[in-house]
Length: 189
Image (cartoon, rainbow, N blue to C red; front, side, top):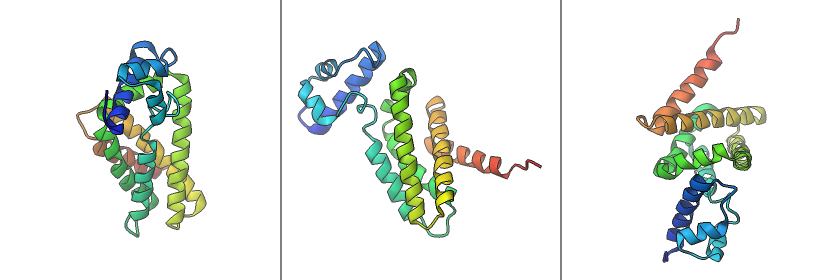
């Protein structure tokens, strides 16, 4: 039986991930997750409101890191440079949790309800990033566009990082933002 709350949460996340991969998300119950983790179901619900949130638990930490990084970016940076800096900082959370990140994305990709939840969480994070840019004085229209475009680049980089672990997330982020700049500099004329 895990002694600390953090240890119980970690074991519940690991048990859920194992069961989702073995049986599928829809076929797994919270009671089965708790049993695999060596805790009771009440303990599960102390840590997570439902079985979906096991996979999305780190969103609050990611949001806080993004907001902090945008707010603390040096003056004079352009919005995309602010976002690259913020996503690099926040990316450390993903890198520290790589053993969980990779199978997590696999489970989400196979489960329509989880893909929907991921899109809702991404929209919420994107709006939070846009608001952080607005607080720095970036015009509303540009803040929204930068946040959405930056999030797309971050998402692209995270996927590339999972597919190609030979380079760190920072390298994939640099490449995604360089590609974004190259796309926007391309003449349509």
